[in-house]
Image: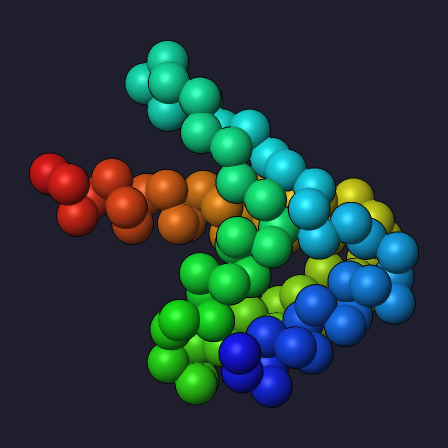
Length: 89
């Protein structure tokens, strides 16, 4: 596991945010559920630069409030699903 991944998970722990929280997405009437942990782990497979961008965006979301974190993970989850679906086309 990368240092950036560890830092993301540490931040969530320190902020009392459950890394196992899940978000449901309705894609063409099919439900997809992604956990915060899955979203972090998936983005940590990207380039080092992308990992740092993810970390910076997470920190920025935390500055807003807890709802900012929820919206952050919702947006990151949507991006993962769109990327996954576009590779299937």
